Length: 204
Image 1 (cartoon, rainbow, N blue to C red):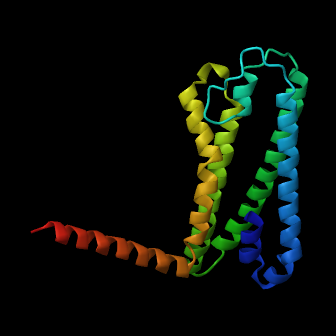
Image 2: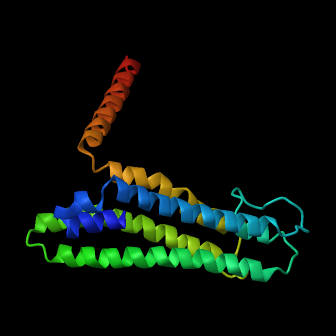
Image 3: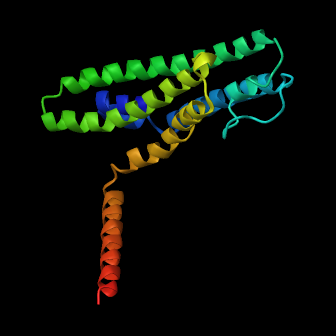
């Protein structure tokens, strides 16, 4: 998404050539491949540890930190290796996003039209907010000291990074679609009209 916005704002005349179907397929394959590799590494490393404190996870989500609490193994080297790989992957994505948005903001601030600047910022800032929420909550979940850990806090943090960003993303990007806005407005007007009719029937 950051690269898409970078090309659309900084190189709009080359958008079709830089972001064709082949480039999109390559970026999607890289994202899915790295995510799958990270998931396999984390899963095999975590579930190879012996559990000596039962098998009930004190959490709604089967999160890796919750599983590690049940382990009695001292295989820290494998866990550190998996953690370093995950942090490196996340840091690489974070640097790419930051560099893209620095270029975007530089281009936006040079725009002479205030309306153009507003439109560009309204396109970029929701994506940046969702990414920031995801990265900050993930880092807090995996790097927080055990002394401040509690089931309720762990649950809230897990929801913030695993449920909220995927749920909000389609809403953020689709609400810029005029047809969807019109359909949503029609739906809301219809529901309000139906409720109003229902109240009229209740009044003698």
